[in-house]
Length: 373
Image (cartoon, rainbow, N blue to C red; front, side, top):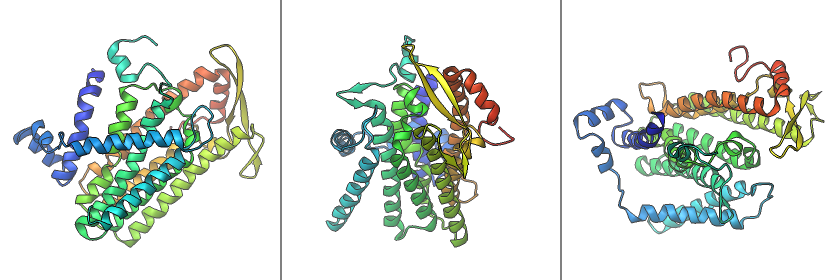
């Protein structure tokens, strides 16, 4: 079943992709040949230092560092402590300072148990005041993503004496995207990841292991295959990527601004068109929310997925259009993820807002891409 696949195959696949990127020149064909004819999975695991105490010490130290930052760095506290941007900057600054220092020293509800384990049981679990999902999703998963991108760029410089244009573009776009995320972290607390998804294997393992390993495949691939893309292609990808990032942030800002102003604002020079949707809490208390149907949110109900996908394509396309699949696997994965999420989000909103959501869908009939979907 898919549950057994999630527990057994997905962790293995992460290791196989790492092995292909590092030991097979990014070739899935070479990986398949080695798995079939040269030792199988044991060959992959033999290349991993699973008993290296320094690795475990580094991971535990990083976790402890992030927990201390969550507790000590000041931040506005709605339901969550909104200090992600500060923690992110401190982490990256600490990494930079540590790198310089080492360089100078010459070192470089009730369900079956499997379902409960996979999808989780509690939506907002806390241990000693530490929100588990904020730690796994943001403080560990996305922060390690940023650190890994920086480390891969440094490793490329160490191996080749320079950082090629493609590596520079993909690193810059990924780091800017993650910086934007932590600047906007308070908005993330209103997404389906936090509100709906529960803290199980799907979320916790995904953010602790899958995000740092799979989401960074482009940068890992380019460490061993640093092919330059040329000034014209570099400028085009960087420019379009930055434009996509700006539109992604702008669209998120429009929705947050509409909520903060209770719909009383102008968007693109016109009064915002909103639907005041009433809904009931579990205790029966009635609340009201604002559904924005102006600006980017008049184009489609999940417009912000478009610039996010185009940005991802830009930092993947630095690897060219050759026969390699690995650099584009995250883009393909994200496309499927966001396609599926659009249905999940629509169902959540329809259950929550009822007739108001039906009215909103009449105003904004497309889920993501106008006239197509």
